[in-house]
Amino acid sequence: MGTLYLVATPIGNLEDVTLRALRVLREVAVIAAEDTRQTRKLLAHHGIETPLVSYHAHNERTRAAELVALLDEGDVAVVSDAGTPTVSDPGRAVVAGALAAGHHVVPIPGPSAVLAALAASGLPTDRFLFVGFLPRRAKERRATLTGLRAEPGTLVLFEAPHRLRPMLADALEVLGDRPAVAARELTKRHEELVRGSLSSLVEHFTREEPRGELTLVVGGSAGAAAEVDADQALREALARGLKPRAAAAEVSRQTGIPSRALYRLIRSPSTCRSST
Image (tube, rainbow, N blue to C red; front, side, top):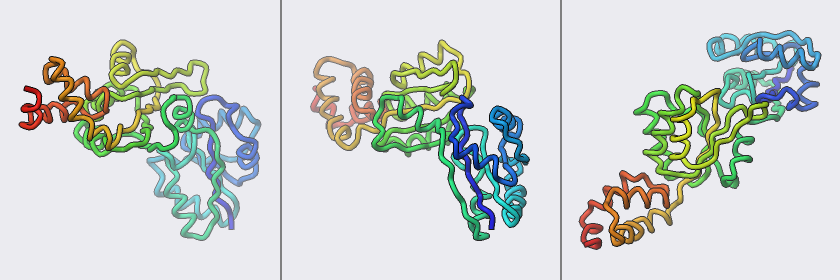
């Protein structure tokens, strides 16, 4: 019975590959690659001549069955363009098929854009939620963000450059202004981490054209305490003479609660009475 290896590959710098990963890539009978052109660069750099077959989102169903059949004859490695197979990349179908057929599935850990961006972000790492790519359609994207609004852990997302601006605008509107970091070209020569808040990232990428796939790290919800304190914070802001929309915006920055929700709270009878 052959073994299916899920081999993590560099997310940019070709030196970021483990000795174990290189050994496995040399020893398996075949390597299933998301993009054979990309994988050939890695193999050539390390002098590996193992045969390649394509395995990507468009042929995953049919190719998964073929790879499971190959496991009857020897070991197979699966690699994605960068990082770990199955994590926002193809691989799940062949893993399910291999397990159903009784084969071993072995992970070969390595580089991760999720962990690299999270570790360098400066945001809490004790609890985080990897979200992957948000939906492309605005309505569905905002609905997903609404479902994440109360998540206390740090959020980690992927986004394509041409969708970054509308995604950031939606995140700011739905989540409120929170600490955030946008990471691009991780481990490469032009690595960049833009740190600040969701509002400052909106401003930055309004001036600068987004380039390359980005990893976005966003602070989690301020939690239940923020919900409890929001009413009092609004009362204090209104007492200082701030207009309702300005008060809502200020408390949103403090608590992470969307300003629209806070504005509705201001317009409620109880808050209005206490501010007059």
